[in-house]
Length: 82
Image (cartoon, rainbow, N blue to C red):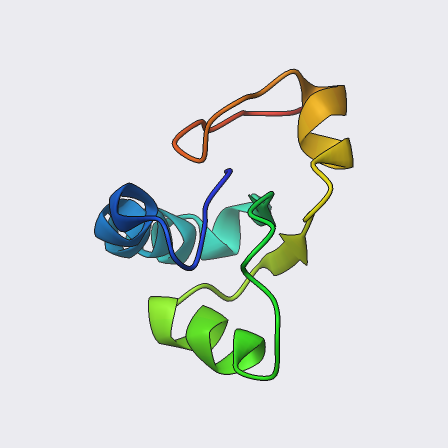
């Protein structure tokens, strides 16, 4: 899922994503949260991620390299990869 620590829309749907992650915890489903926002960095990064309730990998992508390879353009997109 693309998300952002500072995007108001991303912050609004973060609890729903965190709940989905908890609901699928024992089913072999892994969640990866990709943050392509340039401004989402710094010393408070880990604390902000924890506050959102995510336990999966939270990957900063300030240059948007990974987002571009996935063909996504918005912090509101979610992909299912198998």
